[in-house]
Amino acid sequence: MEDKSYITIVGGANIDIIGLPHKKLRMKDSNPGKTTMTLGGVGRNIGENLARLGIDTRLITVLGNDIYGKLMIEEGMKIGLDMSESLILPEMKTSTYIAILDELGDMELALSSMDIFEKMTISFIQYKREIIENSALCIVDTNIPKEVLRYMLINFKVDFFLDTVSTSKAEKIKDMLGKFHTIKANRLESETLSGVEIVDKIDLKKVATYFIDTGVERVFITLGEDGVYYLDKQKELHMKSPKISIVNATGAGDAFMAGLAYSYFNGLDIERTIKFAQGASFITLENENTINPNISVDNIEKRIKELGL
Image (cartoon, rainbow, N blue to C red):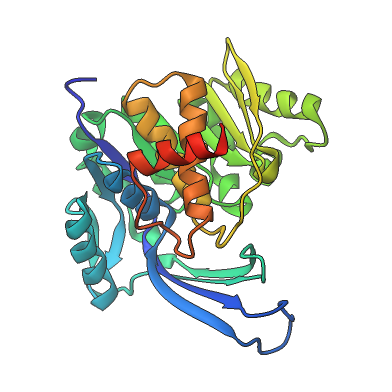
């Protein structure tokens, strides 16, 4: 991949407002706690993680020409995340995402205001064809419109990595699965896409085989504390997770995808790929921020050794 020296991402970017209660979360009540506001969005989070891992990363997203949109571009420049190919809309507000965590740091409820992404059109993405096709791989998330995703998958020649984002948004790519090189989904998203409930290891293989049979080359199913299940046409792996202290689970999936992309970009074998992606997610889970500002290749390698992966 010497001639393909960067990664592109086409996906979401928004302002994250996160609430964490001091004690056990009480529904339908006001909970004392802590709130933080950070830059977020699946595509943007993956991009920041990759930039912090030293990868030249180009994020194509949709922003409003408001204080938040300008802040994202400025912060991107500081960390080396190139957002210059993004669509800027003066009449729209940059999207926002509000999440309420429980006392353990797991998301209990979230609400997203992301209508701005419907303004990304096929005609817009056509102008980005060269930059996308010249990248080592292109990560897409399901925040972007279905017709834009379909156009890219059919017409652009590049290895596409899919981040499903959520069960509801994953529905839009059900009939396009075979166009993806790599799919990363959690248990619920995998069940939604395959129509198969995952109860045991047999079901895991059945779901992953369903993806492979559509044409997907690599399937990663993240299982929380039960680790990661992997399948391709030659290899099947189920790598367990060590016990760690979770501070904030919000950005773990984004860090895992960044780890997958980093590993593919650098030609790591599959065992090393999963360990590196897990290491990236553990470093994120153990930090209060959606993206651990201390994430780096060295720190991931150090954590992998500490945990005995």
